[in-house]
Length: 330
Image 1 (cartoon, rainbow, N blue to C red):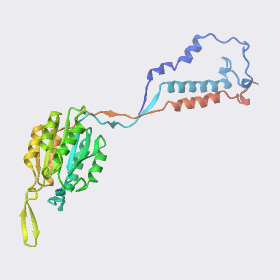
Image 2: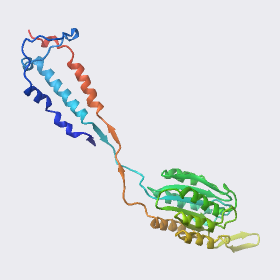
Image 3: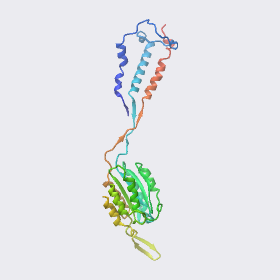
Image 4: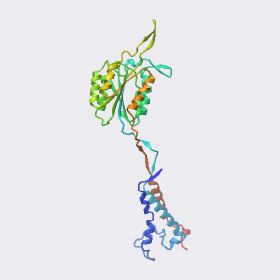
């Protein structure tokens, strides 16, 4: 829609009528103090000429010009569709395990067995896209921990880089402590009241230089909350030359350490045995860390004053052209 920055300037619209009524009329036959050669062809309107055809069209044109000038002075602008601005939510860092054990195919999506990382990508992608207003970052860890995405409001970039991650990209082992330490380093100086780390792993700390529990203590001192997710089925059937046998693919998962990490920082530990449980866990985290309810909307604005101003300029040039010969007094 169209709005005006200074709508009160419409009060200037009757100003020419007031000037004409209050100012004394120009004396008839008064000689001009200054002669302009190129204005010889311009018929100067007077109270007598305004009553005939020669003056009426100039008066009407001058009225339109004044109307356009007042309209331009009111600064019209076009307000576009409302756009939702990123609101001040929380800083949320995702730490995802890319160690070799994440290739274990003990999850099912649409009836097809998939590896743990594929299931994580599917569920985490939906979670990320819902976090409107939060700044999100992504840490990928294996033998080492890497900051893949700094904190950003650009959720699609975080999704893209998560989907591009691959098992073994950061090494085959698991450096949980280093991942927590890196998250603390990136979040500790941020002013947000709510700073959250969601750490997903399927193993135990087998690499790195930082002990996970000590890193969690440091995170607690800095006011960070860590939610830990242990991923992997408890049982699966493996076929071999000696027949089928039941194995525990999550035998290396260190649930004790993950529980301590969550407890120290005021978070929670979750266990995801399958895709459905993983989806439920992210839904629970959504409830534990709700989005801000108050929305902030922005209306993009586009100035329009140059249109009436330009038209007024063109009409002003037309007003200064000589009167057509057929309109001259005989």
